[in-house]
Length: 380
Image (cartoon, rainbow, N blue to C red):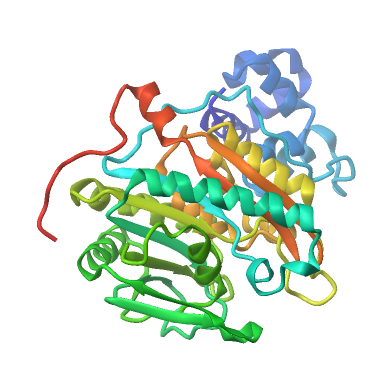
């Protein structure tokens, strides 16, 4: 069942009071009158908000359904749980040409700065995941690597997403009293500028930063998986303290697809950040394993883009503000691509649910009988 068809069925009742009255009086006709299958007809006429929210319908629509069919002003029967609805078909993969690698991993500073605070076996399992991801990235042999992280200690001029357009980026983990954990990256100005232009042309706000001061968001993952020091890296920085929009994060990634396809470069994209992660007092150290599992299941089943349809509140409620970094990657990759979870560890001492995921581009390409990398050349 297509999500848009479910949404349109609900909107039809909102616009047509006679239709709504007929379905309430004759619920057995819901399937016929709404044009949905029997399962979704029953979900609607029973006011099952949890199932409706899980497929990305906005809360305004789902609460209408609850009030129409349950007359439940207090919404007492909804639990706010999320399930991966595998009855909705996975879209066919549509990888952009020239994308040779995509994945994601957490950038928890304690993994390098003080790993001893977490269980040793969990740290070891996580590091094994990073090593596998490094092998994947090395095998892909990219010409350039895009890495998304969120703003921690940097200061930018705007509240927009940021693309680092400089020829060099440097920094360290001095904020964690580890200036020895430093990193210097080579940039790729021409390609970064072309990406920024494409994002702007798509109606998205973007700041071009000639220098991105590196902190743990980039230092940790790149010290662990960067294949070689001379590989050009383009930082993509979100600023959740200033704006939080899952839709715009997805659109940001989608807007970069044409430039990736036209570049003639072998492009890799690494998303970094949580999953569960709170910094606010009273919440730090909490891990929402249930919601993390839901997000990873979406990615594993090729439904990662569905998380971009969730409203900001459930994501922030579950500590997922860093998930925007992943949404940019998923927007670039496109629908229907399955991820393989190499590691997931709930670590309360270091403050979150940490994970490592590889997106299976080869399998997605094989299913479409296309090569994962193209060879179109343009002058940047």
